[in-house]
Length: 365
Image 1 (cartoon, helix red, strand yellow):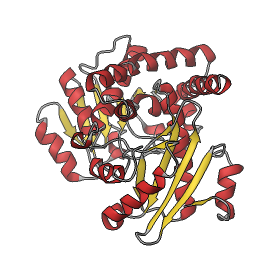
Image 2 (spheres, helix red, strand yellow):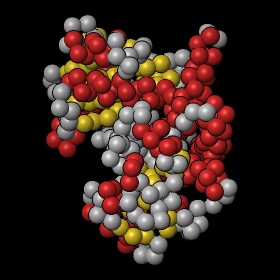
Image 3 (cartoon, helix red, strand yellow):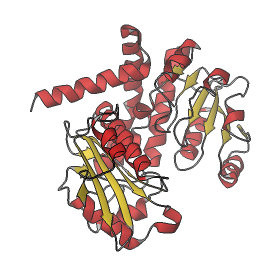
Image 4 (cartoon, helix red, strand yellow):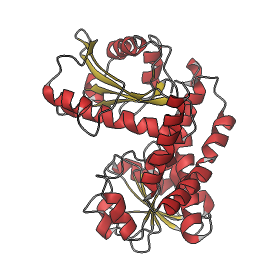
């Protein structure tokens, strides 16, 4: 394991001089024997040990991996603060194709790297890693969550992630239409994988009309077959955002769905989804506001999963976690109220609330 000293100039710039900077610690990890190359970024431990998942992804360059780790770690600080957790924000990325490069030996090596931080970072699942992977990592690192119930964990965190997004949708409906009910609303869900398919169930149980899309045809087919009434499919996200009469758009795949091309043609009045980093750049939220579209900050409404994995550290209790995730409804409404009071977009309001909590924690030390 090596610190950032000696890293390429563009990496050092990202750490210390760019808008992504301000992180407490960034560690570059390598294990030649297993092929492990990873970046562990700790943005803040003001509220407690940094908590965030491990992403396994075939980044084009090492600099791209560092940038992603920095951005994701910062987002976790804000997410954990808004979720009311006693955790700071961290994230790790493993460079490689999980289908080709992931091995038991590599995951064990990664576990040793995380363990070497002595509890400053608690890891979990993310894109490209799963419960079974965390079971392996946990063999070398006790600061591992997202494990299987058989190994003392809480299992799949996507259940409560979807539940939290659903609560965020209800709060958004309350704010826009004066009624939290989603019955009869038309909701477009882009991505019906780990989280999206649970979200569709919540929506159909309440009587919402759902339109879905996914890059995987089998995922779409599974949903349509499961819900022959009230669910239709479109070819892609570009088609989904243009669906006539769409009330809510739920991005539940990778980030960047809200950009200069998608916002001008979006028909929905609300955006509330599970994907991280939905805004392609900071100016996008103003574009949404100018069009009268309400944006529910992604890191607020998708916090159900991190609430679950954090609880695992204290002896997992599903009902306790679900009760905490249900509070996303009230938190989302509070953000909308703060945004209106301060005359700023909801994402900026959420940032202010999170930053205030972190600042108060630092001052109390």
